[in-house]
Image (cartoon, rainbow, N blue to C red):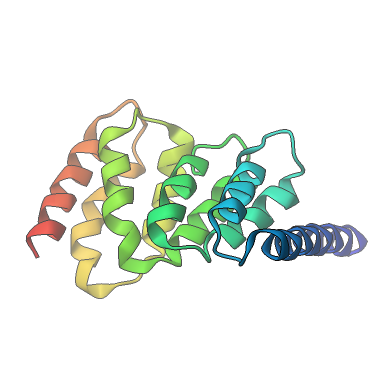
Length: 167
């Protein structure tokens, strides 16, 4: 139990540190949604030399920005070597709902096969929970479970993209 509370304290410390940095940045650069604040958070999230808790806290803050800015960064983070970073990116991208579907499916269809990315994409899509698109996503989800050497996920993602764009 002590180990768990220590981990929780570290996470709280990292979140607090990122929030304080964001507040300071807002004060200096004119508001939370500024390009400068976004770039700072993206840099923290992508910096593999930083503490994992700081990176995941920055990822959660990125989800508060407009989809067109945040989604590409979150998609890139879904290939990270850190499991915590990948899962945070998958959770953050889900917050955009339908806005994330086309960019994520396009990434699955066009990026080189990557086990880390496939696992994160599966995590983001499996918890999407929209019954209107569930039948479209099911073949993609099944394909993402296959080894990344297969091109099946890319093909299924392209098919899903066509169906979503036609609807």
